[in-house]
Length: 171
Length: 145
Image 1 (cartoon, rainbow over the protein chains, first blue to last red):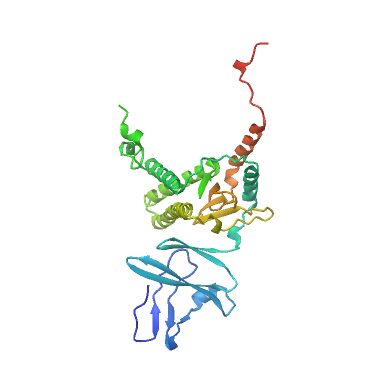
Image 2: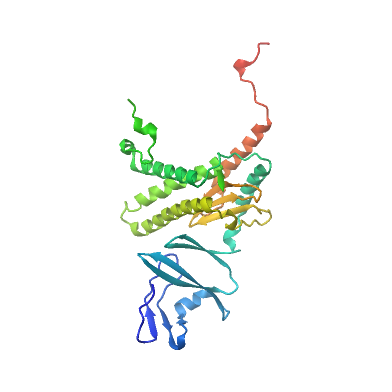
């Protein structure tokens, strides 16, 4: 969130980042001289493993509750990341060319079979679907999951997808 | 763009993952000990699979299969294989420039090592073998000698 303008150029922000992070800490900033200087203390700096003096920086923005929130990413200058916006309040950050993209031998064998079947036109495939077809298919899957989790009594509930067969009744 | 899914390797694991994510999400608070952490993990898996659904729907509506990251194999050229990975969930797609339909070949959960899916590989190989062998006439339909 954008900090309130302060009479003093020195701002200390509480650590409000949680989740799958290696460490989190308060970060002191200084706006003296018109630019923003950030001081990363040892808790964060030791985990960064960054030898270079220059880093790659980017700003992510989030839209929520009628306001725009932003945060800064800092990465090693030699590393490459891809950031994908998943929803107005959610991003995914991926290290490019890292080990996550490399498939293991078992997956490679599995994909080799699929690739061979694809080249020979022998892949067993369902009929192609568009975005609406995908949405309908997934809604049906979630509904099935809800019913399975709720137990047999939920069978009496009306099908929210409006399946005409279920509305017609058995009689 | 359209999407054609492999029922055994994509649709069935995706449906199973949906059931698992929903069941874990609903049931994560049922046991008191460690419920908070379990809830957090389950909520994340649930959110991630919802996000997977939304992202794939967006790609199908607006395009973008080409922009998905490629898969890298140690010794095999997977040039046309792309993946969409959100949290623990991964979908692998064949995206060929000459085709207007992407093919969803695999859906898996982290770790994506496929070691528990050898039965799919075996079933696939059996289908290949069966497709090359002429169908045998049922005993009842055979002509009398």
